[in-house]
Amino acid sequence: MYRARVRMPRMGTSVHESTVIEWKISVGDQVSKGDPLVSAESDKVEFEIEAPSTGVVKEILVDPESTVPVGEVLAVLETKEEVVENQTAGDTSPSGPPKASEWVAPVAPNKPREKPAAPPSPSRPTEPPTRIDGGNRLLSPRVQRLATDHGLDIAAISSIPGTGSGGRVTARDLKKFIAEEKDALPQSVPLSFSPITEDKEREVHVPFSRLRRRIAENLTRSVSEIPQATTYLEIDMSRVVSWRDANKDSFAKKHGTRLTFTPFFVLAIIAALRDPGNARMNGSCENGTLTIKRYVNLGLAVDSPEGLVVPVLTGADGMNFVNLTQGLADISKRARGGNLSPAEVKDGTITLTNFGTSGALFGNPIINPPQVAIIGTGTISPRPVALSKGRLGVKPTMGLSTTFDHRANDGMAAGHFAASIQAAIEGLDFSRLEY
Image (cartoon, rainbow, N blue to C red; front, top):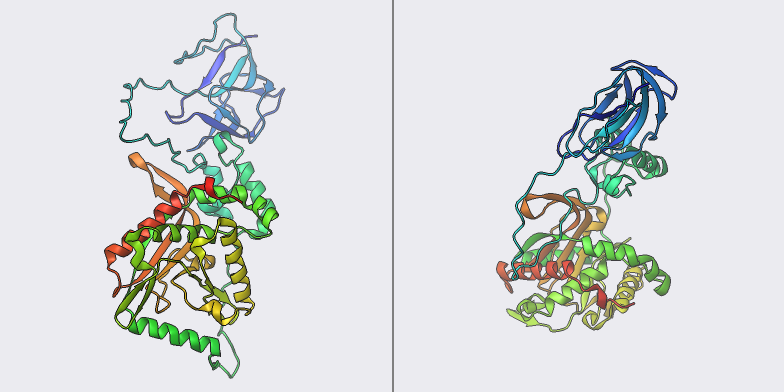
């Protein structure tokens, strides 16, 4: 019997691993040269690997759904004829008597020589390398087809812990996710081509409640009296999401309060207002006079069963992280239950509304008069982002909307304020969040 090392053809300079999908043979099977032995996939294509010669399968070394690095032996084929091995770059296999054919995955090419990188400029710190795929390797064609068949998008797949090399999501990972989370997967919406109702009462007249009338009066006053404009920008939420995910369970266990994203937004707003350049965004405008307030009574828009309510967290700028989180949770809960006192819905200096809970990316919030600004936050979800050096990646981002009273501030000031909130969120010093 003869043996010779047989290597698979190169699959391209970027292929460094492949996944075994399905073996088409078993140990002991007689195969002929050119017979398909196994189907496999790389990040880019699916392919079949053929028998390099006629012989008998002696060993299968890799299980289906296994992702292996290039060059790893997958199976051993015993042959009656010598198989000449093509020497490839970097191959140091000893020659000798003919041996059983060893079947291996594609071989990674040697990296081309590169010029030494120039030392970084001392005035500009180097940026840590960012993976172009946002934490997952590129999805294989089979994973993409499986996701498409079940109506899953890239954002859903990005949340799946990958067991492949480098955290890559494999078909096995996706199948497990679909089996365990099938109730949470998007459901198709049934279509109907009949009238909405067959009843005689095709119109229903609903008088406004007292709360609804007050909301209508206040918003009508806002849009009729205040020249409003809104700025928009997108915020990288990677650090906040990671810190919250790592600490939310221990925080809830210690303080009995669920850790939401709202306290982080409030901290960033307060940090931005500490800059004297943003002082005009926190206050009230009445009778042609802007009153700038160097304290923060935060209004928080809450969607109650009766309608929108804006309770006020007084002295928010003087609270530590725990008190702020608990205070926000308390007024939100009591607002939904209709248990607020009159003093808790007045004297706000700036308002925060989170329309991201509805799934909205951006919104156009309306100012709560006589305040001069309102901040709106959208949903946080993985989205494609541009990285340095022309690269692309996927990060959790959030839309931020800032509506301002154009009588009190101009667009440049509002843009500076929004950018200050962005910088505060993306650069929060988590070491100071003692709890």
